[in-house]
Length: 141
Image 1: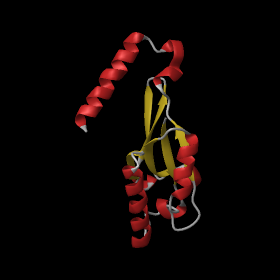
Image 2 (image 1 turned 180 degrees about the horizontal axis):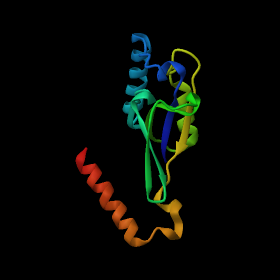
Image 3 (image 1 turned 60 degrees about the horizontal axis):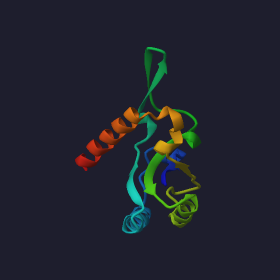
Image 4 (image 1 turned 90 degrees about the vertical axis):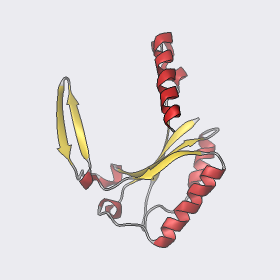
């Protein structure tokens, strides 16, 4: 099972406050444990939304909105992509995570869709195309 682990933004992360050396060391040790366990596929911190953009879609129309964005508690400050046996294993790992922010913070875990989740809409042609895309991505790593 593949899960996206989302570190929610805080006022501090949106202000661009960098972590302390102690927090950075603790997070690197946690990331190293994830990597050694074969769990972590990817993970990065994100710069504040003041450096980001959103593109809104309405039919054929596209509108670019410059950050920063409101609703800090709904924004993402960083992420991991993990391969775990089940959601309980993901929860066990998150419970071991150092608090990723200087103050109160929140981490959200969401499973990724698997090809079988799409049922009948997944035609053999789409499945073959998906496999080609994944092979191409793997070749680039």
